[in-house]
Length: 274
Image (cartoon, rainbow, N blue to C red):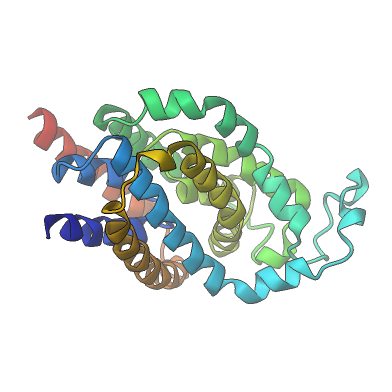
């Protein structure tokens, strides 16, 4: 029974934090330690329920994703002279441009990150550094050059993708780094969030399946009940969380989440090291 409670709790944590700029990885590591559920087996479970969160975003943005799949002018956007066009709508070229920077870096550093960076101490660093980064982005944000995800240029997409590399450090947050990075590039919060979420689908799918291919062998039949529960809980909570966050960005800033990160970091220090 306790295993099922763990599955529900971690499914809620994953769903609530995956697409908020608070670091789902950091929260999963901290909550896993608190519940005594960590190690390699826990890591595989977390990857599976992350797929539930990804599926929620795919459902929310299904119309935009289908439109991208039917776009036939992508070859023109591969030419350098078209990288700053803002009249094509969001295409697979934009998504690829955003994903290109992080995929090879993530692949090369995968073993190092999983071996050395999944700890309470590294999460603390990521939470604080990510919060400072988001506050700096809000302070630097002066003029919005793009307020609609369909008006993003390929060059802006690539720039946001560069910022996504910061999220390889646990606790930093993928959505936090990409949305804040978009602010630095003159992209509005809502447009940056939409792009961040849509781009997450192929990037996170690639990362998840890579993890699963390398670690499926450690699972037993008993683990799949937990995985099923966690997957559907993460899907449902993520679905609600994304809608809430997009509405929140219409009336507030990333600073709120930065403050939240500092509070969680302080509580973590008190609990683990106090």
